[in-house]
Image 1: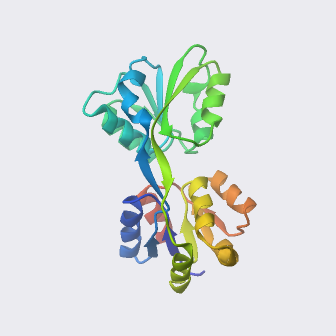
Image 2 (image 1 turned 135 degrees about the vertical axis):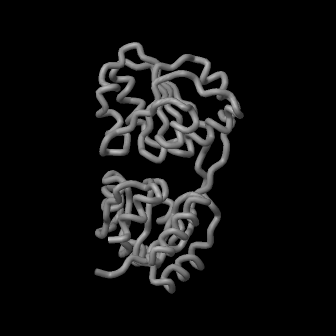
Image 3 (image 1 turned 60 degrees about the vertical axis):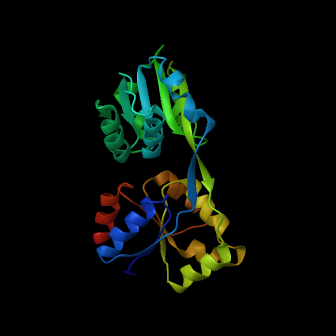
Length: 244
């Protein structure tokens, strides 16, 4: 089996940290963030939003927790039933709120969260979803179908980093990159936009490593044949995966 030589596309500084850890254990990796994060106008509305006494507050990413915590600027998070989509988000949310945080047992995505018995009967319950702008509507739509009153708090947005695709692609080819770690469909789409048309066949020859079958299914629809599911996207989960 060919040894992985990986492109790590996560946000900075997470991309460089994971790259350093992978290289330290002998897995060749190169950091290349494709998107950056900026505050939205909604960032400053946190006190108004959180004053509504929600029954459940759901965080869909570590960034959602970080930006909400920054917006609160030292104020306490409200008492609520907290849920997180994945374990990395759970850890951040637990530390920020000092409260218990429920997380899916296996499937760390919207579908996994929706399978929780806690969210099965929601008539009249008030739910707040913490996330960046855009993204899937499955979670919100399904919760509303189950009778919940759902709001969003979106304190950040993802913005494309200006990159020279021709130069970068040549560098990646010279470095014999044969795989990419992708944590969202948005990142996969951005990677496709960065690589010039003449190198798309090379790009599609890479193995895509992602923490969700949903991302891999989209990769297959866009032309990738080599895809592998990661056990999660936290540093230790990725490190452990590439030890084998």
